[in-house]
Length: 249
Image (cartoon, rainbow, N blue to C red):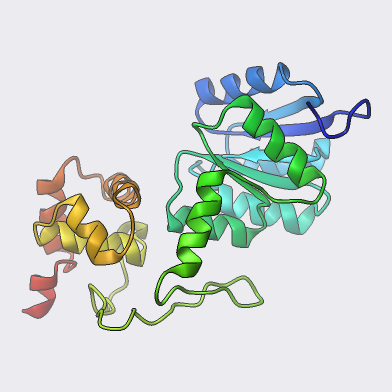
């Protein structure tokens, strides 16, 4: 039930590029008391435009969208329309998705296995000024803060790259030409370890993350590099100088 009791419903805009998912979320929210869906957007650009037109209380924002992704859309919404809060609803719970979204101004973060009650609670929480984080995301934040050598964010919201934990050297030295295809540093590290022949469990141990996080990084880097399997990923790593053996040559 809405925290607002018998007051005005929370006005929500849904942003997701997958039509079936977007329509399903709209239908689900329409069944929940105290929530009114005022619009739906197919990408971040449309989400920013509809926020300006409709002035929703909360945007339920996907991250991976064309034209303007969810992080950039969140940053623009929070800068241009500070009265609108953002709850991220995404498939991804890895560091490279979670922390940029929170730094952009999202007050809530859920994965798409969340149920209707959990989504409604997060929407009402951020509307009332609290954080709307799933238990899994809260645990991820605590794990990150407790991890040796974990980074922090400075006042401007930009991430600070921490030094490797004691006794651990970076997987890859800085890449002189920059990383190809929009790969993040962590995705390039995972790719290098795949090229070394490590399993997901071994990669997780090497990087001090969970196997689930490794799987998410692999899904992301496969999508960015358009490779279909680990063999193609190894070939890509060698072609672009992202394997440790190629950098040692």
